[in-house]
Length: 95
Picture (tube, rainbow, N blue to C red):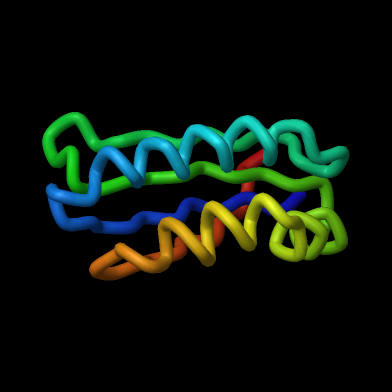
């Protein structure tokens, strides 16, 4: 199982477009056969920061996600265009 979080910060003026891209990306990603979990959040105490929790069955499923048309449109062509910074945390399950 592949698990990680992605944290991105945005300018407040970008938030409507960010929400639109996150909603579309979330719906499409959850339909991928290798996606176990995909949950996007705005931080409660900082609405300019997004945290996405993702899980995939294996590396091939993650590669398929990153090669998908919805990732190209809503992540690369949407979120990545307006983000101020991005941080990924790879996770290892305890059990």
